[in-house]
Image (cartoon, rainbow over all chains, first blue to last red; front, side, top):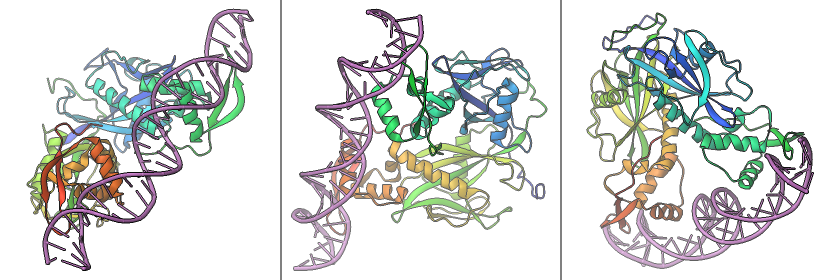
Length: 226
Length: 226
DNA sequence: CCAAAAGTGTTAGGTGTACACCCATGT
DNA sequence: ACATGGGTGTACACCTAACACTTTTGG
């Protein structure tokens, strides 16, 4: 079927790319995965991982591939969603390049990243106070954070940042890191527990201070769309 | 600057298009602007107005142009926003075509549409019960309606469907048409009036039954983003 | 016994929702 | 006078936000 019909002459051919704003918790802070570019333009600048979509490849597949090849992230994203398309004429000096930006959430764990492909380095850096970024990636990151904050209320995206079992203070930490403000402990517990998406896992975690009850996600509790 | 840097060899070149889901109220119903295609593929099928982005043209400019040339809509959209990008490999038989879908709201008034360009016809048809559509346009329309419903709560997008002055029952009609369900009259009035975005315009409108108070939008009341 | 972090209830204000009757006009 | 659509108030349930002390553990 493909090829039997012709495109109209004025059909604009553009470079199609994806960029990924991948978030995780580190040291009680919301971090975003950034890579240091190895090639022009913007060599040595920090940027969101991303690149061109290959032929026959779906957009979300391209997003996953870029995550894996540019940064050697071992863990699967727990959430991946397209959130905006950046197509300004002059956003890339190489020509008309349209980027479909994706939001990813990676689970907790010492998410070790190493440079892959043609990047000089990769690191988890502060999402709320990022370094200067290449291209229009600060716009992309801003919008990604807003979307993440929106999703936090709608779906239960906070759980995706944590391991299978976790404590309520840890969960509250995720909310606070994403919203970038403090929450009241008692109100938070009440809200989450009456929501019915958590079940106590019996165990307790030890450390400094009183050990906390461990929870895991209830059977239902799925991430909703839109 | 453009052209001095080369794209990598695997950079995928794709056709870049925009599609527009333009909404308006007609006969107390939410309607979407559809065109009847004049060319293959899907000739004679209904479709959302849309087409290829031209060189040097921003995405929102392309969306506006397609609205104007394919349908001869006289009125400016009161709201125009990108809401999702459809890039599935097989969504168009002519090859890899990525469409950045836009949501538009047109103000009230007898919005007369005539076929323009290479379309056979154009019409305002029911948004909630549309005819069969070309390509993946039913997916686009579904998502556009969901976004419109979301925006209705967040911003005050309902006002954009009405002329400068309007009555509360008319405004409630817009809400009901978009949400596709009935609302309580007293609760609706209370909510809208305490919100402070409406000011009575003194005049009253006559017709059958008791005349209704006319309102206009208050000085503030701007449409918020994201 | 001290430091550190976890856990626990109540109150007041505001918001959403359900619900039925009277009013102003045109015919 | 009647048909048609516009306009009005209250009560209850629920959610939100503010607020301080006790409990459990490790050192």
